[in-house]
Length: 357
Image (cartoon, rainbow, N blue to C red; front, side, top):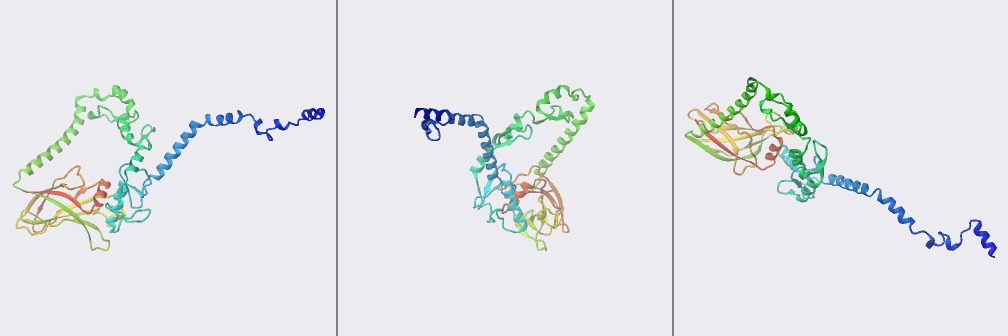
C-alpha cells in the first residue's frame, strides 16, 4: 500500500489535503491581497483624477443654459419645471417675445415664462462658480469665482500696455515681458514735438468733456426748466408687420403738451429678424405753438429706472407750427444685452429734462 501511495505521488498526483481545488485552506492567503495591492497602488491617483474630470464634465452638461448650452457667467433663472437659463438668454427670450407679440416660453418644456414666474437658482449659481474654467491667457484651470481676478491681476501671461502709452507707445504684450519692453522702449527718447502730437489728442478729448460740462451749466441757468419722470409703455403699429414701439402719456411743459416716442431698430422693416438691438426716441409736440420753441432736452435714468446711460447726449430742436416732431435720437446703441433687458420689462422708466431757450 505504501508503495502505491509513493508511486502515485511520484507520478504527479497531489494528495487531497494539499490540492487547492479540493481543499481551499491549502491556498496561500498572501497571493490575493498582493494582486489587489498591485492593481490599486499604481492607478489609484489616476482613477481619482478621471472620476473628478468625469464629474466636472457631467456637472457642466447638467448645469448649462438650455438656450446657449454654455455654463452661465452671472445670474441663473429657471422656469417652473426647473429648466435653467442664463440671464442673457432669459432676457433675450422675453425681448423676442415682446417684439413678436407672443408669450415667452421655455425652450425645453414650452411652459410660459416671465419675470414673475421664473425664479433665480442660487444653488446652481454657487455650483457653477466652483467648477473649473481655463484662463484665456495661460490656459490653466481655476475655479470660476477666482478666474476673473486671476485674469485681471495675477496671470503672468495677461495682456498689458506699456506705461508710456500716453505718449504714443502702442505695445501690447504679456505682463511677464512688460519690464523688459519698458527698459528698451524708444518713446521716452522722443522729441518734445513728437510727444505733443499725441498729447494734442488728449487735449481734444478733454476739450469735448469741458464743453459738455459748460453746456450743462449754461442750460441750468435757463429761466424755464422742467423735469419729468416718464414711463414708456409698449404698443403696436397697424402695419402689415406689427412693429413694436413705446410711447409715454401726455405731459405738460412750457404751457404745451408733449409725448416721447421710442422705436426698436427703426432702420429695419422687421426688427425680429436681427439679434442686434438699438433703441431710438423722439420728442413730439402735441399742441400747436404760438411761436417757435427752441428746446434742449436730455434723457437720463429715472428714480425707478433699470438702465444707466453711459454717455447722455444733449439734443436740440426748434419746434414750430410746421415742425412738431424731432428726429430720432439714439437712446441705446451698441449694447444689445442692455436693450434686451429693457425690452423684457413691462415698461421703461426714464427722466426727461427740458430747457427752453
